Structures are given as structure tokens and as C-alpha cells.
Image (cartoon, rainbow, N blue to C red):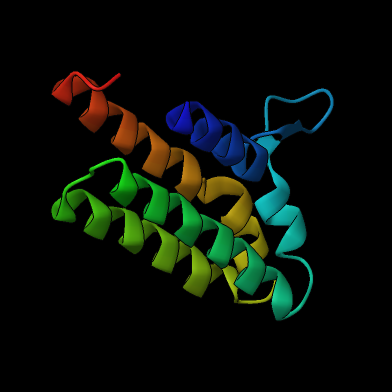
Length: 111
């Protein structure tokens, strides 16, 4: 049930909303990131929570390292005004992380 909860959180952060008349999806990460300073800190903390949960599910260190890299990239570039906001809407680091975690767990027979 934890993986399902993490998938839901990743969708909420990265792809929950769609611009009407297009197929362009974005999530709360892009919106919260618009708040100067604190917005990117909040979304990076939520993304870090996803990584912590992945570790609790038994993800190996190399996978955790890749997930941390995605979170760090999102946090650093996301903090750049304007460019970071566009990056947040397009990068979808949380969805990437959950996809990697799901693949790992499926290979292990845990899902």
C-alpha cells in the first residue's frame, strides 16, 4: 500500500493538472515552487520523503543515489526564478523516482 500512496503523491506533485485544450500536465510542485524561497524548499522536502520511503521499502543504495540525484536536480534548478518554474513543470522528478522504484520492486517480486 505504501507504493500506491507514493505513486499518488508523485502524480499530485508532477502531473495532477492539465492545461485545458492541451495534453500538457503539471502538478503541485510547479505551483508551490512559484512561492519565492519557501516553495522550492517545501517541494524538495516532500520529494526527499519519497526517497526515505523508498529506502524503507528496501531500495538499494544505487537506486537511492539516483533518486537523490533527481531530487537535487529538481531542487537546485527549481530554485532559479522563471527557468526553475518551467523546469519544475517539465522534469517530473517524483514520477521518475517512483517509476524506478516500481521497476526495482517488480524485479524483486515485492509488487
